[in-house]
Image 1 (tube, rainbow, N blue to C red):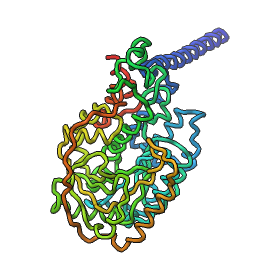
Image 2 (cartoon, one colour):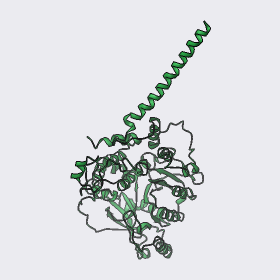
Image 3 (cartoon, rainbow, N blue to C red):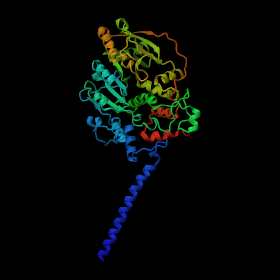
Image 4 (tube, rainbow, N blue to C red):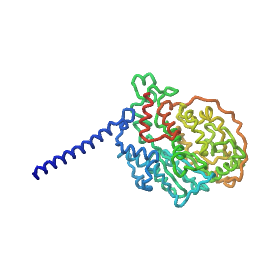
Length: 463
């Protein structure tokens, strides 16, 4: 009798084990064929649903309150191996967004006020330019009171190691969640099913490539390497002002820069002074422009370091834009104008928006610039022969050293720019794909939720 019971028990255990194993295998297969396991364009992802949920949480900074304090170390970040496991690598980098760990804050506590400045830098992969920029920041007065945010859209251990070396101010690193480095064969990168740039609509329709119905104004199709710049431009401002916890109630000034700029030592002083005097010299101004677009105007440092000009904003007016939260909140109402305009350049899309939606956008700009373009030789659209980065840096440093006594003005004298507003122009194209437009709008609407969102966005092209 006992032997019979034992056999029965073993059979029961065996059946239970087989049932549990079957359920487990079934769930794995279910995860593999579930629509979230597809990108919406016929390609598949390898992460399981749990990994995707984690990716969503990391993207939107919604890890539970029970998650322990920052555990992501420099060593972990420097050992990221994209070629070994691209999804695990992205998950690691997105922990920067969820943990929001501020380096050096124990040495430089932050006490925000209405005249505080936060510097936001869009970083790609110009290591030498970024190194020069960081060197210039060391000499900026009040930099130790300033949070510097690096928003990366490309991972390299060399770039991260350079940022780790900063020891003179509080530093926050973020990573753009939809970087084409991690989406190189699917939107927002270039999917194998997407139409080649120059295929032409007739041939595209015949071949049935994915976005055949949506060539741009000039008959070309999107390229991820170009659209990413505009996407990242919107995302980083959205994320810093909508999702970074320490800046939840920040009412100071956000200074937006690229990674190939050089800063004068009195740039924060100048921003604070413009803040103090704006209510008198230009109450309607919503933005400060801190430097020339390219030209280094040496004579302006002789007698005009305390002069500012009032102007409407336009593309090419200058570099280094600074604004308060109220500008960003107001500009969100122009999201459709910005995101639907067929131009992959964020600055031309912004100019279009100031002509159609945010009309007569007034800015203040120092006549003697405090932001300079180091990348004038080798930018995204240029590679000038005979132009040397070190010579550009040397020229800037020479001017600032020669006229250092004229920096740190005590007050400003304002004048108006008499330039006539430009007429509305056609965009340069590259931004006609409804997926790009929808992703852009999601950023403005603060509705980013990781890979899930990309799957939904991919569907807009088929509806």
